[in-house]
Image (cartoon, rainbow, N blue to C red; front, side, top):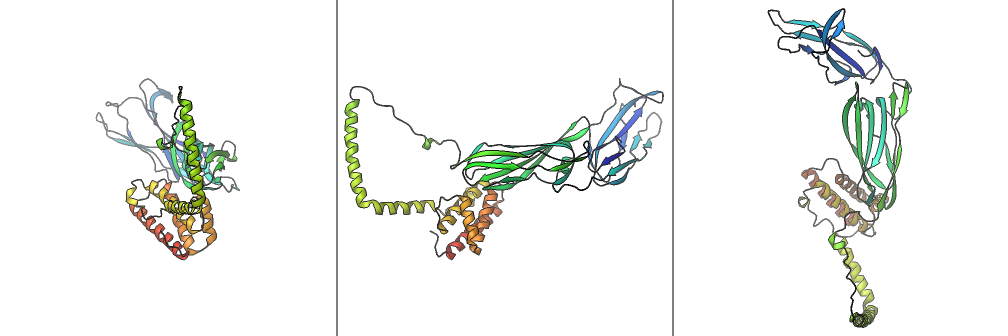
Amino acid sequence: MSRSGVFVQQQAIYRFRYYFENWLPTRESPQYGLPPFEGFVTYELEPIPATGGELVRREGRLYHVEEIRVALFPVAPGAREIGPTELVLPAYGGHPSRTLRTRPVRLTVVPLPEPRPEDFSGAVGEFQQRARLVEDQVGVNEPIRLRVTIAGRGNLNAWTLSPPVEVEAATLYDPTVSVQWDVVGEQVGGTKTYEYVIVPQRSGRATVRVGGLSYFSPSQGHYRRTESAVLTVQVSSAPSGPETPSERRTVAPPRTGRDSGVWWLLLGGLGVALLGVALWAGRRHARPAAEASSALRARSERRGLDDLRPEDYPDAREFCKVLSERLGGEAAVLLGMSPRSALVEVVQRLQEDGSAEAQALLDALREAQAGGFAPVALSPDEIGRLYRRAEKALSALAQARGERRR
């Protein structure tokens, strides 16, 4: 063993060395069987094979040496005994097969000091934490990816808590977690990455606060905390995407030549005439036209769920995003709000309503939002159930409000 006493979750190394003077005729290594290592989390390191040119002197004799190494992380305090490793020597040259056994190894596991911090996750080692936002500018209701990485030496699986994240006026989803292991020297470690999805629900500068977590440092002999971070991202009022061809404006170059002045006079006169007609018609029909335009806009914005079919969306996440937008717009109108109201305002009004119908619609809306950015996409059956649940909740709220869905 690399040491006779360690803290809980502190790494120790179990070494098994096989010494031999001569290579077997086939240059094969004997077979070995390691003990079960009960009470430990194990990580097998790369073996160190014997080479023909390197010899080790032991008790006056020269040997070739092979070494097997296993990193051990004890999970509970107390005295531990690791059983023997068996080495099976094959039969050759008239010599029978033999089995050799090592002596047991004893190790004392020391409990971690008390009191433990409330945010102690169980990790023991030396670690650092870094956080960054993948996107630096997004629109309202567009996802922001936050990556928090814990890197260092120790058992990464002992980090049982996720770094705490706080952000206002946004929906925060549980992180997806990935672990990448490596070995530096003989110390096991690597990186553990938490990727959060944040969906802002209002424009402006959003502030994301990432807190630290406590771990125990064997080298320092006390608890420490990883670094916290404060990050900001600019959220625009409209979705930030590439400009579509229909949104591009083409400006015609000015006319040149001797006849340009005549054309401008003619166009100016025509413009004055059209403006006079428009003003006269506007005074006569301004109110009815405004009312018709408002009604037409309301009908076009209140698309409802009638033409929304799950089978038209091969991407389940995309369907959930559209469903949440439709639900938000329909709920806004039923609550007497503009159909273009921010989703966070709609959620707040549904909470203030307090009725069972409003709560049912709020639950369906939140489930649709979660499905739009979930790490694992919903199945077709789950999508169908969510759609039927949303349709039922919307109809119930409309009936309760005395309004039929159009």
